[in-house]
Length: 339
Image 1 (cartoon, one colour):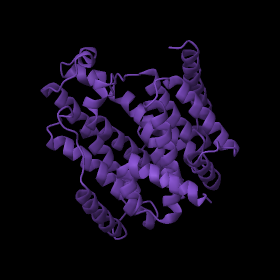
Image 2: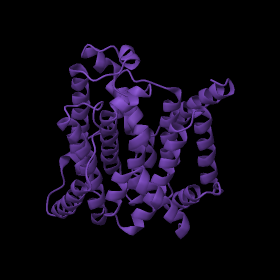
Image 3: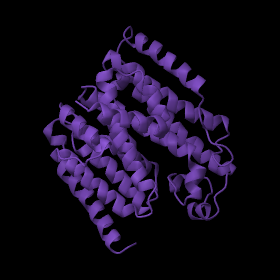
Image 4: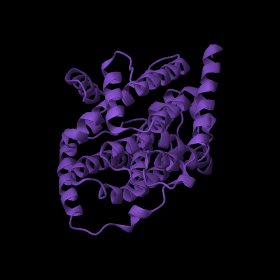
């Protein structure tokens, strides 16, 4: 399906750009791991295209064009694009999912901040839960409940990333913490960005954010048990590795300014072993009722886009498409004005 040279390029990009996923991917069967590497390489390319360039609006618009060509079957002549186009065709990937990712990157390009936890979840739905939904499609699972739990895991992982990167983001003028949560703790978000530093109040905000991540990690586990047995170790590994980052943030007293939470190769190996063991145990246990919990509202559009058992009256793709077009139109206007 994917040309060996293109796949090798994707593997190298993930090895250096996303070590946590690269470690977890070793536990996926090859039929899932190879297209997953193509998926993550394109996501890494998209993230870097916006994050590392000063002309962010132009970068997002260029990515939108690349996505369009990939879905037409005429990808740009680059390894990540060719591999991504192959993955799309072979797995009938719903276009709404990678489009949601680009919408999240467009929000980054706009420099958005987020007023509430719901707003942060909406951002996380686009830049992380969309990837979780795409991974579930790669595994051949398209039912509503499993997709909802995959989105739980994606949001939890992104909340963990936000908690880890508070200091780094603030020094770059970016803020992903809920503004109302900061204000509850006596922090002025704008004053914080003007003079970013750690404080006890900030630690309480990060603590609350990681509490929400922990809730979603728990919910996600019921969905892992609904995946094919061969896929469960890799997804359990991703769950434990990212949760391990959150635990390190806690050990650092929620301080991401003086130290960065990271995990060692030895710890990752331990989580990989634990993931294999937990996957085996899931075959002996009854299905958790948590599997059937409704999706958090902010990810429902992803579930509807990917599921093949979603009743037609619940699909809202027309409204979603209009909202996405509006975001890209705003970026194009911004780009033309040279803002």
